[in-house]
Each structure stands twice: as structure tokens, then as C-alpha cells.
Length: 170
Image (cartoon, rainbow, N blue to C red; front, side, top):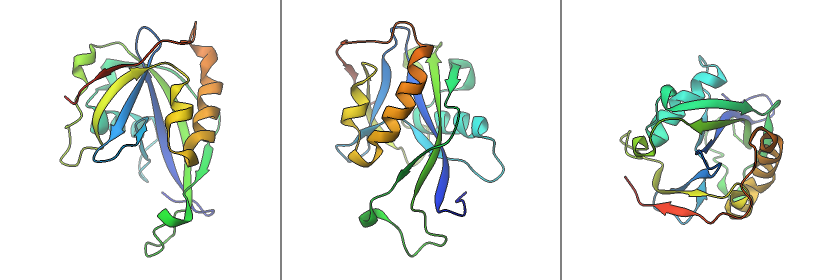
């Protein structure tokens, strides 16, 4: 779903564990880490897209998580010109995202990165709350900062300096 300004509607997923660490995943075949995210289909609500993407990208079901909160409005980023797919119409210049903060209430061994034929990620780990702002690709940093700043008050206390504990591909 691309709007009249060229932005694709999307949901971003910030998943935390009981220690308020965040799920951080490496894109398959790349040295790029990010939160799960994905497009909203024409027939879906943002919440339906959230649960579909959660299952497709990391194998979790709705009963494995609890929604803690959501950003109040769309957050936007532009895709660098070198990555634009000009041959596809309409041209998508960026993403507009609603970000959801979720808490894992099920067991972390339910995380399964191969739930589809085309997995998005090959490794994941738990990281401190603010690490993603500086580690995601530069063109997404402003949106990550906005989402994390808006949602931070929902977690008490927000992790300060805990180190990441990485878990290999499952």
C-alpha cells in the first residue's frame, strides 16, 4: 500500500523480553541488523499486519506476546535514491510506519527464523534498549530514535547499559 506521497504503509516491531532488552535481528546474507518490520496489505489493519509479520519473520504467534503500546502517528523515512526501484509503479520513496512495542510472554525458544520459504533474518540477540539507534543503517536512525523515545516511558525501568547476549540462528 503506497500512499499518494510515495510512502509504503508498514509496521515496525520492537519486541522486549522480561529484562526490557530488545530483539535485534541480522538480515540474511548481510551485515545489517534491524527490528522486524513489514508492509501493511490493502485488506489489513496495522494490528493484523503486526501479527502476520511477527509470525512470518520470527515465528511468534499472538499468544506469545503482549502489546505494550504503539506510536501515536506514522513515522517516516526515505529510502536512499540508490535503492529506489524506479521500474515498479508507483515508485516507493520510503516507509511510513506505526511502531508497536511488544513484550514476549511466551518462551524465547519459540522464536523461529525459518517460518517462511524466504526468511528475513539468520541470527538474533537481545540488546539494550538504545543500541539499535546507533547500529541500524543510517537512513533508518531518525525513525528508530523517534519510536524508541516515544515508547520508552512504557517500560520501567528502561535498560541502561546491559550488554547484548546473542543467540545463534534457530
